[in-house]
Image 1 (cartoon, rainbow, N blue to C red):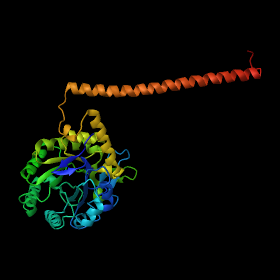
Image 2 (cartoon, rainbow, N blue to C red):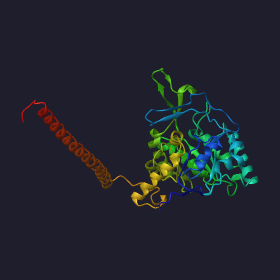
Image 3 (cartoon, rainbow, N blue to C red):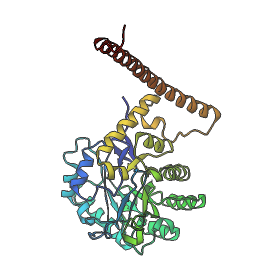
Image 4 (cartoon, helix red, strand yellow):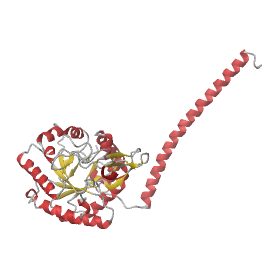
Length: 388
């Protein structure tokens, strides 16, 4: 029996696959569908202090072949009070027989907002135990708020944010709740090292890093109208979907190498299949978030991806995700030969199947030709067209 369960920052997840904050997470009605799926937990929409409607429409775009999506939403959400309200959590999680965790995401417009929201969450956890909040994800990576810098790229600001967060009473001694950070994508090794060094400095409060958020400042053009496909911010938006998977894999691998072992890594970006999730885990991800695929396909994607991951694990003889997590092998001639032979065997199997089909088709054509010839001969004899 294959087991997909894992723990993230000490929080048990029924499956290592769960939703990213963003698509289909704005309301309890939407989140309840995630809770009923194979998703290992539920992560709410990134919240601000007050509710907001976000940027002007159209603010999203999907490439026709499904390989890329973009958004410049501007964080539309119902405000932090909604996402930490007991009723919202109860309506989201329902009876919750598997005891799946409910997690909150925050993305304040400034450090003061983030500190205030953390204090609100603290009050709820302390004073209302029935409002079960398992973890909090602090978004340091949102690139689409007009006039606001991406904290994850401003290392001085990022360190200041974590310094102020660590000074809150809820993180003194044993933290009241696990804190995760949503990180932007990095592209240069020195940037990976700088970001990891800051997170390691605050390892007493930072329990996981989710890599990556969208790749910022992408641009889609409507060539028929000769204008941007997205209205907000002059069309500049965050890129997501399968196109970003390879950048995400590199970020997961490098962050896992550089971060302290006590800090988990969550892989996110371009995941739309069990194979994608397997690759994230192989690079060292403790769990895998699904965003754009959930946006496009709906919560059924969690069941499909989990089933596909289970099939891969069974084929490879893995019983748990721990059996292969973080065990990406070095490139080797032997490995390349193994992969090549597997592909050839698969192609041959397909070709053999195609050959049988062609053979059957040729046999059918031959009998049709014979019947047509017999009919022609009989007709010719009946009407004395030819002499037999």
